[in-house]
Length: 161
Image (cartoon, rainbow, N blue to C red; front, side):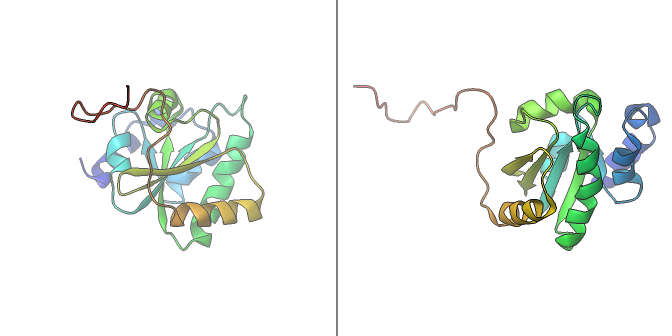
């Protein structure tokens, strides 16, 4: 499914995003972000270029999530549109968070060409955001800090004994 088809499919299902805070909905309706759910998260992440997944969290428990929703398009402008924004639907946040090792809300997960780069958690001061986003856009990709034990191939030499 193409990005456009995914965007249309979710846009045609208002029940999927109607419960999101208005400032989060505005990321999609006015700032070109894309709704991301458990079904299309991998497709979004594997898109070309820099991508940011936004995990807002429950606005009652994490009110700063709405603040991040306001700052995020300003960050995108400050970096001349270098990254695409994906807004993870509240109902799918836990499932998508496990894949990328997100453990704190709100969070911004930076991806590049389908690979994990880093996560910025919480609300930051503007100057801190600028510095950390600049660093994130320059970082190499790495392994996501997901839960679990890294797998080693059967042909790898044993370090035991």
